[in-house]
Length: 376
Ligand SMILES: Nc1ncnc2c1ncn2[C@@H]1O[C@H](COP(=O)(O)OP(=O)(O)O)[C@@H](O)[C@H]1O
Ligand SMILES: N[C@@H](CCC(=O)OP(=O)(O)O)C(=O)O
Image (tube, rainbow, N blue to C red; front, side, top):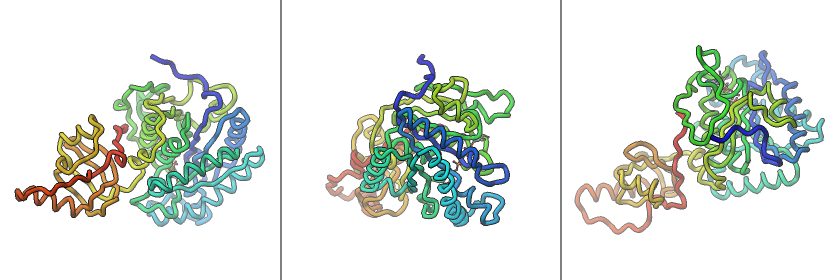
């Protein structure tokens, strides 16, 4: 079995995600000391030849005190409002801290749906490449003011994994308020830290169900999912405590006694498909039989009409749909038929009418993203 690496690869491209819980003080304000420490460490990494992209949560948390709101609201419009108040404040703090160390930052606010669209995906990739070529440190957050329930990613762990994919990062580092992933929520009797997750190790025995901190969103579940997504697209992932940032991001390598290191499970795959699989709004569902499921997953074929047994929801052609096999979701993809056209074909088949000769695939292979199995 390969051992856990003791350093970040030389000159590697690193995405660092900092959670709300690590950027805020107990009284709810932004933790300026934490931001300063991270800015110094990021500047050092840049000097050692790393490209660094930061995914910073904290807009909602930074927006609550000026609005006089004590607890993170559940209501989406209140969250959007708080984030709109807080995002500028958050960036002002990063700007002040980073400029002390000579680092130029760039703000990029993303929504999932934007990036799933081919032309936007290309534009965002080019923007990141240019920003990194220019030596800046892009700081990313979700564009909470415009992300609606259906479109939003909701947690920045997920966003960070997709950004890591977008910039073809070598390493994704998720900084949080716990020392990595444990077998169960720290404090649970018998829970112990997991230091290394080699490629084939399943996470099924890990209990990630404990809720996160008061200001964080996903707890460890979304971090496990982010690690699974990032590793599947060739990016090693580290989950660690922001309190250990100096030991983790400093020049001395990555001590093997802190955090959890996940080994990549697949090659780097620059593609829009990952965004389609994880970040796009699903407008309907197409149910398929076992033969069609095999054709997609084993045969790597397009989805054809004869394998379709049902359709849920109303959608136009060109919509992103989920493809459901007998054993659950198989893929997402862009459907070349409207739901009504599929229904007509199914009705005709049911009444024994001669089947029209449909040559167009329901979902072409080029527009299809298989869904990997995520941590539960
Ligand atoms: N198996 C586990 N290992 C570690 N932490 C866990 C586990 N299960 C649940 N947690 C919780 O996840 C929390 C971190 O998630 P969250 O509060 O969303 O952080 P962030 O704001 O950094 O995204 C920890 O404080 C911990 O209580
Ligand atoms: N976009 C939100 C981040 C939401 C989020 O994922 O927070 P966290 O779980 O703390 O990383 C914000 O800036 O407040």
